[in-house]
Image (tube, rainbow, N blue to C red; front, side, top):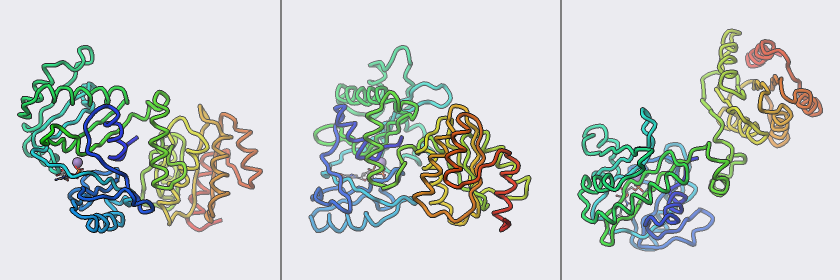
Length: 374
Ligand code: GDP
Ligand code: MN
């Protein structure tokens, strides 16, 4: 689960990490707007500053104007639905500080640079020596000398303050099962260190342990995007492709096999969409929503399900719920088997939907329908 900046900053505040005073503003509620301030687009992608999604304003009129213009933007294809309006900071220096996992060793890794701000990618590429990388030993934990080494590297005088700041970031990273906590820029102000930006990603596998955290943040995100079932998007892998046979499977292996079969039988898949191992009616619903909202030109939808842990009655419920709420005018080819197969078939039958037993026949029909046959 990726968090918006304002959500990440709420976690920072809770953890005692200094952040600017600010308010969230949406198109329907602009009451939080104030000036002078920094008006910042809330999207999950980075690089907002360069794309014009962060504006500094001095007066209320400028704030209104900036809010209007940023709320009508799309950044990397993502419409801006909320703003974070923050007090302006007097910035003396911009650092970069992040904790993530080292892909090679699997251990947590601190990264720090005195060249923070909007160009950290080019710093990493052209002058990697300006970024300090310090692995955290899982047995020793984060030791004081590493914190001093980081402060030294950054050239930050108040080592005690830095150590306390970085330790809070580390505790947050661990307690919230984060896979990434990035602060860019971490700014030096007259009153010390302040996290001016926040990029946090929480491990989806921690959902059972951090139920409240997930529910709260996913509900906030769903309220912003207005997409039903968004809460469960985490388990869906969706890749758009070039063809016209829409495809949804409940596992990656089944999906790959079906992709091959579609091609063998003369068709082209419009997408690869798999729901991960453990599914639910909501995930099934979201998968259909994902495919139909992205692909306007598919000619048939092929749903291939093998019930292991997941139950066919739940899958059938997801499919029929989607069809009750949306007008779908293309042929739907559903092949299901396994756990709760009879119950699933009964639900499909009651909704007047055909079910296939044989995979090859199902794929052949989906390909034929997409080609205009019947
Ligand atoms: P990003 O481009 O998506 O990473 O967005 P950031 O939140 O990092 O903002 C981009 C840049 O805007 C920062 O690097 C700062 O230089 C600048 N910025 C953001 N907030 C303030 C602020 O309150 N005061 C000043 N002076 N600059 C700010
Ligand atoms: Mn940033």
